[in-house]
Image (cartoon, rainbow, N blue to C red):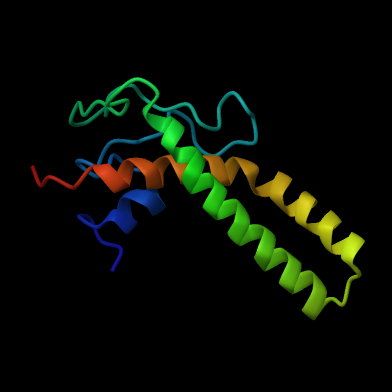
Length: 123
């Protein structure tokens, strides 16, 4: 299911969407705002240009919005139903979880966005 050649492989392993071999991000996962979303200009293995057009990754904001809404709803339901928190405490939990998951959300939205437009090419 998650073998090379699938979009899930590229997303879960942060690999080039074209060859699935080169790293998409320059750095491993970090909470540093400067390092978290730095990407290579081209794939280190196949040379695929990640920034296909100027401001290409602005579209990743829409993916990020969808992920954020899913996180907000999930945390609210868990806080309210499982832990029995009141409304104010539930919203505090949402804010805390969203801040903690922000770097992951930013990386995930970028890799998902580029995988929507680029298909795997077996070399």
